[in-house]
Image 1 (cartoon, one colour):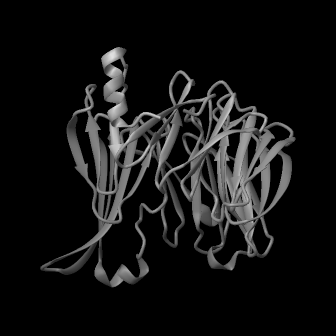
Image 2: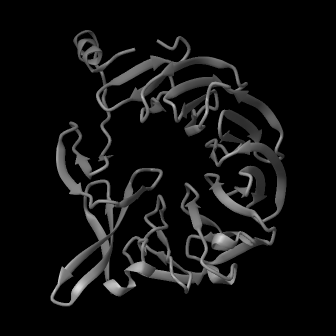
Length: 362
């Protein structure tokens, strides 16, 4: 393993090509870097800001809700800012509302928003109208829909764009009633392609994902006992397969880049690898020492290795047959990813960068 000092020593004997990210997101700011890794611009974040990056890290959306006072009295403020990874503001919106509505507006209007790799934004408006607004890269609304077409009362929602930017999947439920839940697929322009509405008291779609080209859509239903039931749909809305994970808590999922596999981490201690098309379970990995679950998973671009990070700070490298090659213990908050050539693993903490060879783990 090489800490930051180790990397400096390595520069003496060999040339190291370092590719710095264009944007670094921390708790209080987004910092934009030049090609040499120097900060060229900083965007400070207000407390309780929500932030989302497109998966290609080209676009960044930031929302904030805060309260101010002027001659009119106390005023609530909702703000949304859309920037690229160069730090250029592409568009922004601001909205004010009287303080007497604060009790009804304890969340941001922009509490549920998603950013695509092509610069589209979907805002699921948390209000009685249940609005779903589709914005283009210039901040113009190109389509408005409503999730009250699917449920009767306030819905808790989440969504995700496919990596190619062509499709958007949205899930939600009937708020605290939990007697109706839905999964809807839209195209990038906000046109509804198909929907699934289910009325099973106590069950709700709580997680979803969509493959790179939109050929597969996965939804995880959770009941009041926190049991996960997985449904896989085709691009046309056909139910391809189901699986009962029989695990407490929510899950995390990831499709391989070629869409052939779906990797699932289910709390508190399991990983599953399935074939996307028919749901064949290829293997199941369990670490009985884990108590909370996995917070990040990754599949190498060549479909040879799997990287998983547990809430407790454990980092695992497995092959595609489910064999554990090695594991490392770090503090909570560590981030890990594959290098661009797929031969090494980077593990980053607040104060150091370590790099491990995939096979040897050192």
